[in-house]
Length: 141
Image (cartoon, rainbow, N blue to C red; front, side, top):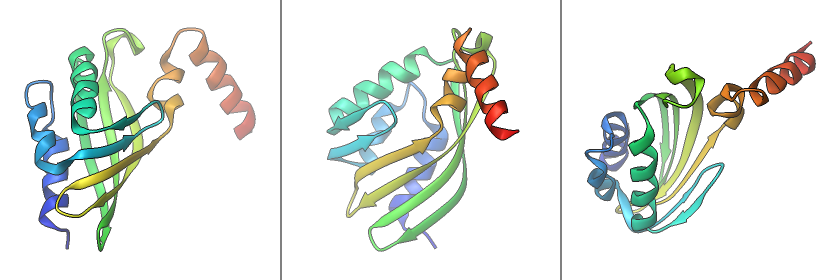
């Protein structure tokens, strides 16, 4: 059984878009430390700005929460993100598998995302994508 905060986190992310980013404040503390492959953000204001910029450029972004593992003050969320960006992959849907490690008390104060940046971005860029796919195929064979 998950806590109400983690249930709210999952609900917020599954419905998040550029028009309701204020919901981030429902689950994140003012001093949130948010880390992903490209950023290390400190504070709810920085996180809100980042998401505003990110969601402002996407055609859509959806999260499917696949598993939640929670214990005292910590949670790991396994998810698949589907998104489309007009300048990446010709605007077609891209699926990315990832997970989030959360630490919380009354609200979430630490959030670190783990994901494959190749799967999310690099493999879908002209020229670079072909090179990355070729390397992955060689390593796999």
